[in-house]
Image 1 (cartoon, one colour):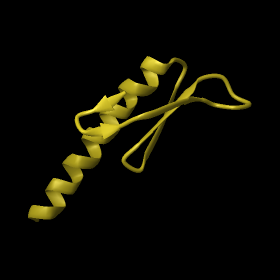
Image 2 (cartoon, helix red, strand yellow):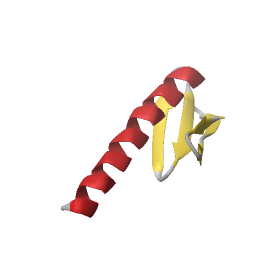
Image 3 (cartoon, one colour):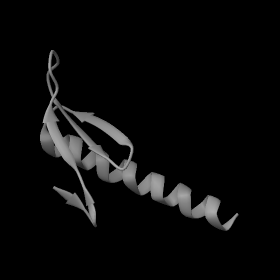
Image 4 (cartoon, one colour):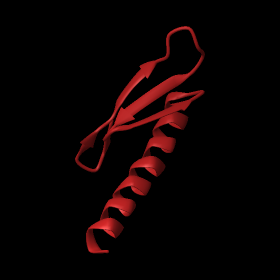
Length: 57
């Protein structure tokens, strides 16, 4: 899966139920792959927004 140009790695969490997603120094978890991906989209948006804000401040 991808978010823009960034690759998202999805995997099943061992010894837990649910899935995790890793992308751009962010880690998210969700009960399903879609939920983990949706949370990752939000996390990446938050990180890029913060980076842009600090760049121009």
